[in-house]
Length: 562
RNA sequence: UGCCGAGUAGCACAAUUGGUAGUGCACCUGACUCUGGAUCAGGGGGUUCUAGGUUCGAAUCCUAGCUCGGCAGCCA
Image (cartoon, rainbow, N blue to C red):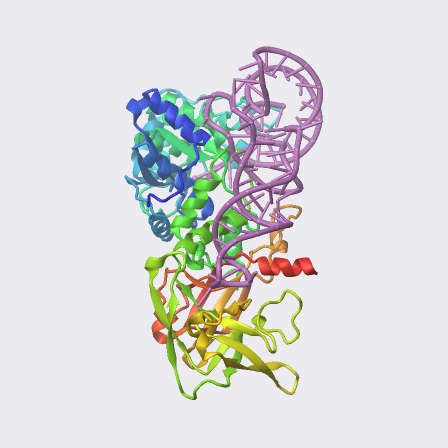
């Protein structure tokens, strides 16, 4: 993690940790953990949690484990484990210990036996339906299970036989004996173990009983002696249960602290909904560049630095806020502005012929790689008698504030020459197909010795040297700020134009050496990167993703004009 | 019903133990003059939900009220 990262705000979680350290709690030791369930891909919301957990450990000289919360074999897989490992590393974090809740199955079983022996847990033969019915409601207490007072020895024997596979799936469960009248429904004799004959990605078929999250999570924290167990708000009501287990079993007193998960405008963040988008083919996969997943963002061109800076900037609180998507974009712009090499690319080419250019002549001109960073050096760009300009950079009948090319007008071609448009060539339909221009040899490099000014500098690409590329322009996946608001079906708010493919873009030849994972600024347009899945530069297949556009004040100005 | 959280600028959010209310977007102005769709600088804009209270001092603490949101699975 680079030292240039923004200082994280001192949020309420850090305040708690700082207080504990100052008070000498746990000898001043700080231990956190990031506990994903391997049932899907990580998204920016997880990045927030990762930055929080690993960040706090770093700041307080502590440690952060990566622990997979793999207690539900039916939804989990090795594929997800691998992707999560990769994403956490890519974000720039290194875990102290790599653990799996499934590693603790034997010990968790032992703790359950202890609870039974202490008369604090029992085997219940009620069905899931019955348990649900007897739990009571928000306003009424629940009823005691008829099996609640079974003798300890019988519970022990039954639990042992559950493990041994003597009962069918879902037939009986182990429950804690707490309080069926508690206003907190989580304390109404919660289930600790259920029977599921499912193949587990790590323990295989060794177990047919699996612990529930509530039972497994806190004990796993305690086993690792996690001092601060940071999770999201929906677990707040579970905290009394979390503490009950640690107290009754007599384990390390890990402390659970809840914060608000990340929400972003113009997207959805739940794994379930993201999965729905993948399965319904609205997107091409979990790594579709429009997805808020870590993989999607990476493929889109986001950098770990930008993501970390974003997380530091938004801070953490207990308020379920919705962060403006532009703040994510700004974090990327800020990062890439400092270090992305500049290149020229014409997305919608309009051919230009320089009439007074010596036939067959080619010049290689110096072009600065990054005006923000002199150490980035220069490159050479070829200039010949035919080139491409952006169609939008020419107007035959320009409105008042249009400063770019028009008949009779002179503009500068970046790093090259001043050119003047002399005529327009149209086809039978009256469409402009080509421009005729002249260049001023005295303006080589872009300065005119007589000091005359031009109002615009345009990007361009030499026609005979141009690479042809596919460029994918992305917009928000959803057309409204809050896709889940005011509708039962969030997909009705999908933005039909979230992907625009430009198939005949022209690139300056140096882009043939573009590398996957590097962001380039296409001047005056935005930041782009090679698509890691579909591009193959060695086979001359160039596919670029627009990571984020440059701020667009011209479009705004135009809008203002009406 | 219980627990928790939130009401702050047009919008979305901040504000370390009580000490001149900040950030992004939007808006306005200026600088640069080889990204005029980049970048940088500056500016306008708030009775901090209401009513009381504590205090030299309250967005922050207390009381009452109003409004809104989250959670309540043999998922995690």
